Length: 204
Length: 146
Image 1 (tube, rainbow over the protein chains, first blue to last red):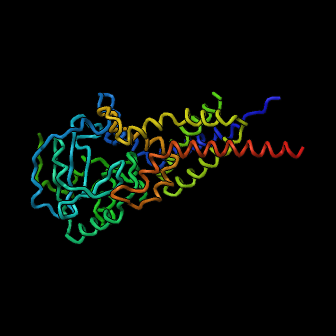
Image 2 (cartoon, rainbow over the protein chains, first blue to last red):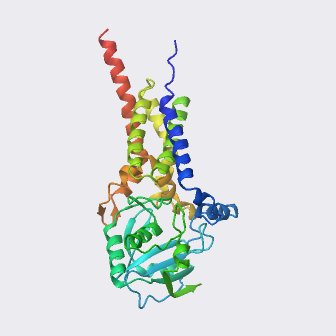
Image 3 (cartoon, rainbow over the protein chains, first blue to last red):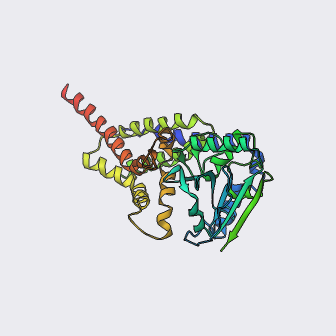
């Protein structure tokens, strides 16, 4: 007689998926009912053919990084980005270095000059006292090597993406750069935050 | 063999979604990651397979991840597609990511999790074959005692 396949192995995770999705929905009705939520913007852009971070290339925007201070935020954008005008973000930590998140490098330090490759770039100053910025810089430095996950939720401190790391760093210091109820933080939210002022921006 | 492959795909796909959703509740993702390995181990013991079949099932099951891993190494320059290889591999490796997230040390600018990510398809194939072999070994031993 043929042995019966144990379906329990296969059914555990579909059941967990339904339970977790239901739980997320119940706890985040505000997000689901917000037409400005990142997921709806992403889906709308995807419908129009914009997928991922856009068309990467070296655009040579020629922006100056003079006068940057530790704690400043740098945004870079490629054309066709699915989640907004800007596709990437980093936090300036001094000495021409920026800490940011990449899929292969995790949370890591890079030279700030690479932001010249973007089609458009914007330098932001957080309106907070110097000790707050210093704490934010200290926080991102302590998270170096952290795992990058493109769809990392705001919750938790083991999964990061380029925006979550600096949102969390400032949040830990009492500054919420993303006041919108959402699962994720997009670079555009930093641009629109009342907590920042624009130092300079440039577009190719 | 087709049923074994299909079952592995189903297990992996739903584990990916469930583990990702579980990252919303930090800590639960780690438990589900361990549960995934346990169920994968159990799955390996569902039916006895010949050694070559075990490897074949493993490679077919992990074929997408092998492609993503190769794209992620940058060995293949396929324009913008290659750039998304690492993202696709991250999504594929979601059931194991909670465990990888504990490896935050860096070596020569790369985090420890990156090589683990690249090796995910091979690690999963080896785990699957190990689980399947265990089944065969147990089966053979009981036969000797007859």
